Image (cartoon, rainbow, N blue to C red; front, top):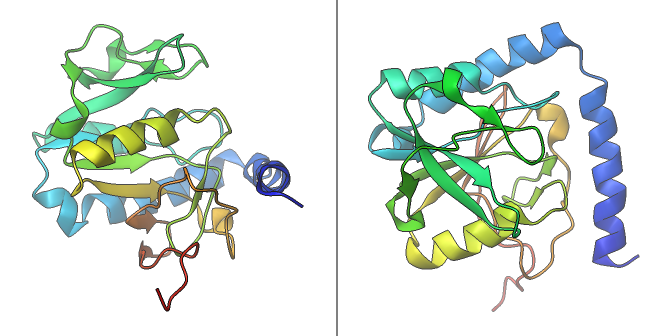
Amino acid sequence: MNTGEEKKRVRWEYRRRLAALDREEIVQKSALITARALALPQLQTAETVGAYASIGNEVATGNLIASLLSAGKDLVLPVVKGDGIMEFRAVTDPARLTPGVFGIPEPRSGELCPPEKIDFLFVPGLAFDRHGGRLGRGKGYYDRYLARAGALRPDLTKAGLAFSGQLAAAVPLDDRDLLMDLIVTEEEVIICHGDPRKDPEE
């Protein structure tokens, strides 16, 4: 099975797992994830923080967004453009977000934030592994953005938010996929080390 086919299989499996979560479980686990995320040492020193507005059965980020704003962070959220590009714009009032291309709440009128200004970025995903491997929904928006942001800001901290049931033994990766630095679940904070695509003897 090639990487593309394996990604499709894993996406189907983890969409199924997310769909099986009930609302109470999502709320409870998301609260624990939010508390762990807000306590991250890397976040304390970050001035500009990128996050995302959750939809469906994703880790709920409403309280995280509110807490980041209350802490005085410069908060930016993604806006998906029709040309396949994603950009981040400033947010001061989450109540003013409006649904975008995929129904995800976005800050349409906030100040545009260049990738190199973001110090810390929370990233969504369907599945993650302990090496920092991430499997998104297949559109490639985050992969393209992270490639651009990483080139401009090599010290950008990338943290995936996930329920423990979204952790896979190994996420299928190709050369374009960038690894997370941290993964935060309701049970633990995983510090990611090593790229599984590289020979350890290199």
